[in-house]
Amino acid sequence: MTFLICSDLHGDLTAAETIVQIFHKEKADQLIILGDLLFCGYRIVTPTSYQPEGVAALLNPMADKIISVAGNCDRLEDRQKLHFEMPRHRHFRLGKHIVFLAHGDENLDFPLAKGDILLFGHTHRPLLKEEDGIVYANPGSAALPRGGSAPSYLVLSERGLFLKEMNGSVVNSVVFKE
Image: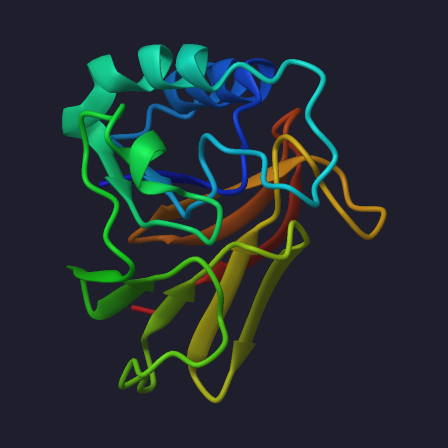
């Protein structure tokens, strides 16, 4: 099973279209969206191709392939346009790993243990690190990257977790031991 992971699209149709193209190119089975999907917020620069209805129309036919969580900018009226759920947190098992999904990484009550993976968005800055046997990863933002980072995404499989720029080049990786 291969997962393509993105976050913080903020209604940018061009970024969403690129993510869908990459989803197919990576031959992913599931698309994980870590929040802030449609609304650009009140304090964020509006993406140049801000079309939240277009993003919803693009992703709704893929609803059975989407696993998502809500972000701080995911308003109820926006979530009602989607054909998939956006709970605040989720988790699932991938091989020997438990994968936890959230929008932000702060104040989470996940019982993280060695071998677990925490995927989160919100900062618009890519991150992939392993500390004390726990993997922490943020795909950054395909639409509005911050901190001088390039637009990016993550690919997760039972082999490992890979942070990639939109052109597919690997920036960082954590390979899982058998």
